[in-house]
Image: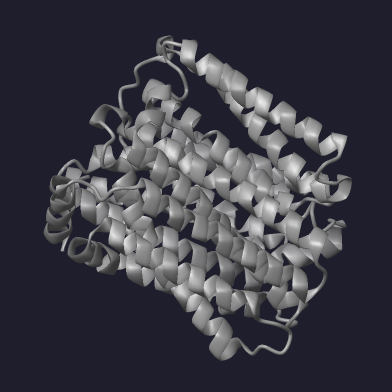
Length: 468
């Protein structure tokens, strides 16, 4: 096969793997009430259907990227797809809440192995700036489109078949990705395991994050000041401290502590985590709100969220990049976050008598537009001062904090809202808390982040113009 054709075909394959991950991350949301009814989840434990996946996914991204450098990215990518596919089969046959949560954790682990090397594969395959910009645009569109497809597919399968099939749908996609990937993706020459894998660090940080989320999820049942909550929280902090101490002593740590000295990276990463806390809350709480308060079916819920994902897709198709070159990354980011806050404020005022149009429709469109205006500037600013040698580490660190921060934020918001309000009031309180999280993200941007240097912005402009 022609080398150029093979590269673009390989892009399709890795995007197919990313599509499977994105579909699975949203397909579950519309089926949550059905899972709760069939498997006996409590309102607080239901968040583990989402959080088990997010914690595993976020906690192993850095390990996956490092393994790709050591033993080969194609091997890690295919191993992740294989695990994700097998876990999907097991999750689809789940007959109990514990079984489902374990399956979701394994899905998250498989997704992290694949996603942790996808960007590295794209960067390696497309080294010319114009081609790389085109490839990353395709990748971004897949992320946005996958979210929309997951909502619609989840609604259709849950309503017309049953919720178990939202996991079985991954099987043909996974098989096709493994077959084509083994043929089309070129393997990089790994450095070898002699360079070391920080297994202890991975275990410590994963344990700390899992314990912390469990503590937050169960706090509503035991009380926020109880010995149970305070004790588990203290244990999670101790594990995190041990992780930091370990990383400071190792020659090849999972997370070299020097990355924390990069102001733009840490600031943008904190802003991303707070932003995604609000966005994750919208999809999770919004699905329950539409079905419990308005009586929407699963498919109707998927259609209701479609404007959000479509607006993200429209912005990601190139509009956000063009706006960023005109007004600057920081200014566009401030505008995007402000739009999201406005959308969440609108949602915090809806009730049982609120019709879909105009209130919900406008809010969901604003969420998508704001998200589309925020994602690219955040990525641009976060990587603007990261040395080329640490680019993979910087990207991995940002994605980990985003995923885990979103999971922690969702657990906190749902726990606080359900313990302090009932019925529609709980949904309204959750949206208010989500708006506060995004407002905090805006405060971080205004107080901490600087616009990238002119040369960085110009480089982005050139890449966009060449890609166009």
